[in-house]
Image 1 (cartoon, helix red, strand yellow):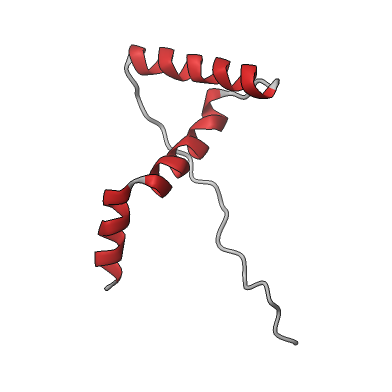
Image 2 (cartoon, helix red, strand yellow):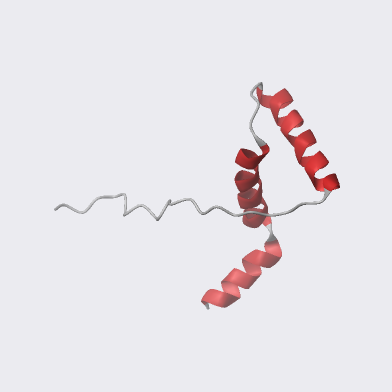
Length: 73
């Protein structure tokens, strides 16, 4: 088979996590979902927003990036 520019896709099997949050965080997440709907005109469930929020947070956390760099060196 010819070499493809696109490599093998990573495992995309979802992993279900169950967490408890404070009432204040629940209220803030609900308000964030409201803000998302106001910005984009589409309502998304909080559970659907959280993975993207966490991905964004981890991608922009400089301390975490430094930790990863040390871990791989």
